[in-house]
Length: 224
Image (cartoon, rainbow, N blue to C red; front, side, top):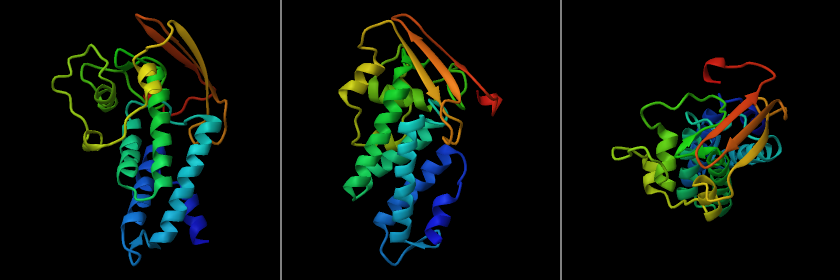
């Protein structure tokens, strides 16, 4: 019952869930056996949070991401998984973290042109005069933008991580592929419980990119 309670707790929006679950998983692996994490033993916390993250990754493969390509909230999740990748003593956990990091960067990077995302986002804002955190992450890993990044900042997680996107992700982000191309993507409801809720299209050429999404419902409209 205790395990079910911890697994079924909603825990906020997607980036909140990934932040606290990745933190709890790492704590459970690094703290001594006598420690408690939110009232649970380290082995209970590790089992429950690892199961949560496995379920999240399985849902992503089946439905896609509910908070898809959010330049506002993706960095919060990415930083948590960078912590897992760099500091977890458990190899399976590190590989799970690498999988989700690869997913974030390859799917987000597909819609990036000149360092900036050009397609639809769930819970995102328009790019403005200053580079946001996700654009700074893109610059740190891929160095592909015409914006002046002389005073750009990166998080301590990115500045110190041993994670590196692979060559396939590198080529997709930097658009070292046949252009133009079109992409059609189905998107789930926010909680990733129902697939095919929204239909997204994206077009990218050498000089511009453009995307849109057909919505069946309007939720959090100020971030759509």
